[in-house]
Length: 238
Image: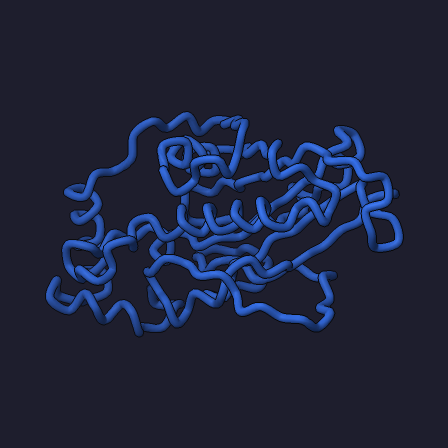
């Protein structure tokens, strides 16, 4: 229907070897790779109906700007990046609800959805217990920043304008956007924002975040001094 779709485009390296640490860009490649299937979602409880893995830093692009594999009209379309909801714990940017075909057609925009680390993998605050994991409580947020850097660096090749990027999200996704609006690392990566049912303007401080982590460790039958063990426990147990 006139929309080119790219699914499962890698924007970050496998987070498994760097659990609870900031994401890093993927190793560059020169070969052609297929982009016809969604990438894995973050590990989570419940029935997602999708493949999950700690190797989950993938995004998807819908664009009306390509014909025969190249930008033909020279247009720079606005870019809309959707951050899915799910209480910071569940969900995926690959859900059927977020298919971008109709929005790209109706709005003449480039649509991007993405997966990032959720629940403990993205937001467990371990800094006071494992000092070298200082960024653990914001790992999921840093994934979002890395995805927006990918958009800045690559979206022009899909007919999008890296200078007109709007982030929009619902519930937990909206709250993550509110946080990104105050993150120096995200400065300049997006230019408009819309939050739907997620107008959170405060986040948990390190004291309360540590209390939650201690409760989580207790459920795992780990003492606080054993907190570093979560770096190697099976993902399903976490």
